[in-house]
Length: 153
Ligand code: FES
Image (cartoon, rainbow, N blue to C red; front, side, top):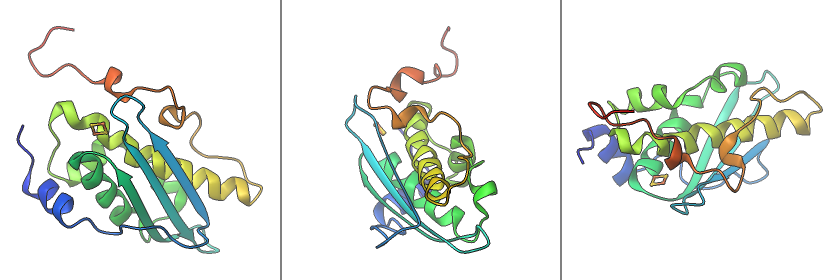
C-alpha cells in the first residue's frame, strides 16, 4: 500500500493532537471492527467560527493523518462550511488515500460533525449533520468500502 508524502508527514508529525479543556463541542466516533476511536474537540466563537480544534485518535496511520488534516482545515471556518467537509475533500488535501483506507477518513469528518452538533445542541440550536453512522457503536465503515478499481461490484 502506497501512502502519499503528505499522509506520511501528517502521520509522523500530526498537528493538533490533544483535547481542548472545556471545549464548545466534542465528538467521539468509533469503528467496532478495527477498534479505532476518534475524539475531536472544538472551540467556537460568537460568530460560529471554529477557532481551535484538537483530536485524539486511537487508530491506524490513515485515521491519524486524516484527523490531523481535518483539524487543520476547520480552523477559521464557519461551522456551516466545516460540516460540509467530505471524506473525499480530506483525501484530496492529503494527495489521495489508498482505496482500502478511504473509510478511515470517515471517522475524522464524522467526529467533526458530532462535535459541531454537540456545540449547536448545547446552545439550544438544531443539529446540522443529520444521522452520523459512525456515532452508532455497531456501525462498520469497512463494510462500506468501495470496491478497488477494476473489481466487479
Ligand atoms: S483501519 Fe479502521 S479506521 Fe483505519
